[in-house]
Image (cartoon, rainbow, N blue to C red):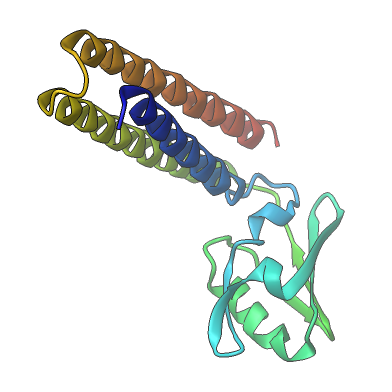
Length: 186
């Protein structure tokens, strides 16, 4: 494997890590209704675990209301149960075939808790990036040891991997700043 391939693979893994952090951030409630809050929630239905978006339509007809409409009436109760057991702090209201999720105003204490959660999610992302950096560096060193790349290529590759790590860490920091601003302005 050439050093270019190692760099591309490392960048691809870092991109996936960034995408995972973005996905995790979407699940953090900011006080306004968004389908992203619940769409990846796991629901026990049909003898297996499925994501809510696979079982129901999710809409936000008002800024402070989510409506979940299961496609099969038999899944209303499992969906309600999954929503109640989630860490969202929202009580679902079943109305026949639909489930309403009124999004309450965030208290100052809850905002601080959510900011801490965002910090933890961001740190998990940074740790994953460092993990990918380590794997990339190890792969480069192995290539150099096997005589497939020169010391200069190793040095250049190490600098490139560090540059990628810094770039993706910066992107995570931007996400954190944006999400914190969302939480504080609501």
